[in-house]
Image (cartoon, rainbow, N blue to C red; front, side, top):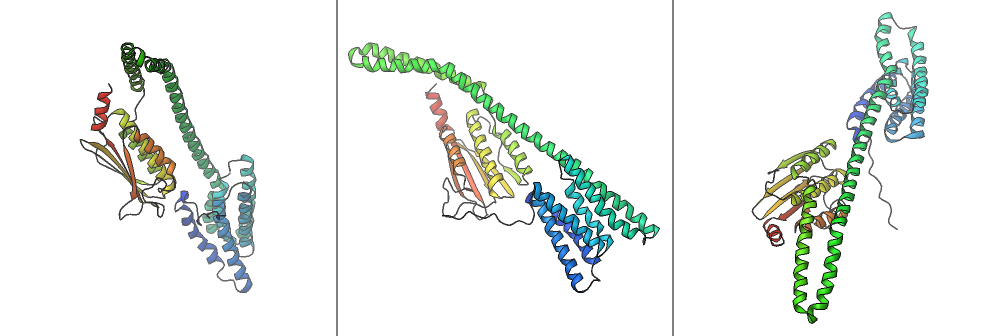
Length: 389
């Protein structure tokens, strides 16, 4: 039995960037505050600071009940470091204040705030008697900001959550619109072509029976089949003309927004307009670009994406290249090679086959990553469309 692959260890989630690491600088303050201790007390002080760092890391990684438990442990460590070492360790509460603001449940937030205010007031009462007026005036604003900051952080988190929900709702609306459009097209095709195709089938069977018995009538029926099929073709084209085609330029704009949201730099090389390229070709190329960009964002681990477009008299070419993890070992150019998503490439290939297009997948040359090249012939397809008109 194959062992399940373990996820690589990360100190902090990548989505937070450098923010968690910057806050670790302030761990130097409690280390400095206990520098004069000796023996076992010094060792226990360093151990509690180290455990505090562990709680800080875990609060970025866990949710639910585990989050509350780690937060409670962090508050306990602050109390111990303040009461038995230095009251000014109360400023470690800035770490805790940040995490309290993450609570979306109003009851849990209020309980955490009460506990936080209590653990911060205890060391303040211990030190306030020995403080001069200047020290008190200097300390009070920072203490007030620290205790009040969870409210501001919670407001910011709620706004981000609402923005995320809005994005999800927008995406759901887009999917519903697509689904409704597919259903409309299916209904139109069924209503428009169902009778016509049934008629062609019946006439084809009649021609087969008349081929030997009555060649003249069979020829007439065959001509009728041709007229019926041309009418069906016109009906299909009318349906397609009513559909809104997505151009390559529009899809590139959307791809750029998605990549920038994922912190992936995006460069476009070549002509994005692709004048005189049919709506059908642009639609399929747009779908291929969307699928490739989605795979890059989800699976490549890339920091850069380059899309190159080119056109000749014979074909139009699109190249999508990233600097991510690249192809699976031993499978260069295969449909399962790019980040393990063969189904995506298979779907692209099926779409491209409708317009006699092709795709190739290869390592990105000397650069790390993968390169997907799509090619669609123009002249051959246009000739065939002219013959079938």
